[in-house]
Image (cartoon, rainbow, N blue to C red):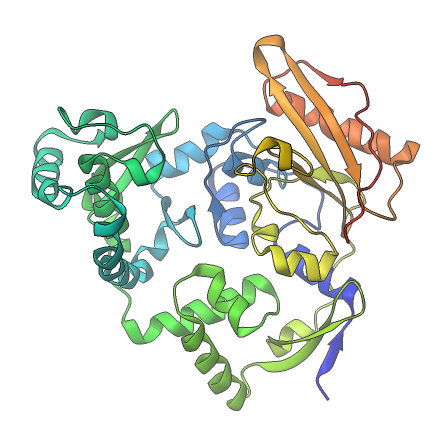
Length: 401
């Protein structure tokens, strides 16, 4: 019979790999920051800035001495990090560029199949002129190209041809993001951004083994589908074949994970992982980004923690259950609630609209004190002077049928 990993141990294994077991203290710049990102795998990039951008908040929740210029230096000066695609736009260690080159080829085939139906005609005609312009004059952003083109007012589906061409060239590896101005991408030739030592392609036959092994290490345990989804570098079919072969060779074993309701799920795990004794997480409370790597797989988070979370940014306001951009709240090894909070920097105020504890969780005086302490730290990070609690902020748990 496969060995059972009880729910509490499974949570702690998972949180330890995501640097959420220890207190969020210690250095958060230079090599220490780079090592943290290596440990958690990647940091998702997102533009929403109600408190702080997702990539900054992900790092702050693990190292509260972190400040955004430290990340900017690694990306734009040291070049030890770069931006590309995992399940979404993400910050990755630059050493992975060689692995990603197989993805550039794969994405070019997929984009050919889809982009002609998604976007306006004419973007392909811009490829050479954009590449030649960048080679001659240096980096550009979308505001620098497309003179005379009709600029849409919709979302990504309404990009003008030159913007579409820039994104194509980035997604297929011919351009790289050299920096951001505000949140706008500035593109340059890849060879000017990625150090030569990292541009050598990894042989295709090594990509699958790397993707599966590294994903399983970052996850601690997982199904073949979870392994495939981690980097989005291989298909579920390829991950299933790898798991089957690795299992036959004794490199991985099967185990069962216990969910928060006592349900069980078969997973794969490295034998040495089963021998680990994960630490008990710090009892302090911390506020997480909705795009935190530990919560990226919503179904996995619900199975392990009993925490059902769906971001409601694109849900019409009258149909939202919680709010536009609501932050999960972690305490120890439990997700104990979610909070609707927003920084009003001009007023110097971090305003708390609502906190909902999870069913079975009470907002005790001790828990409220921990929440207030974390909010005070978050206010400093977001450039605010104080925390304001709006009337009726302490809510009752919502039932989920």
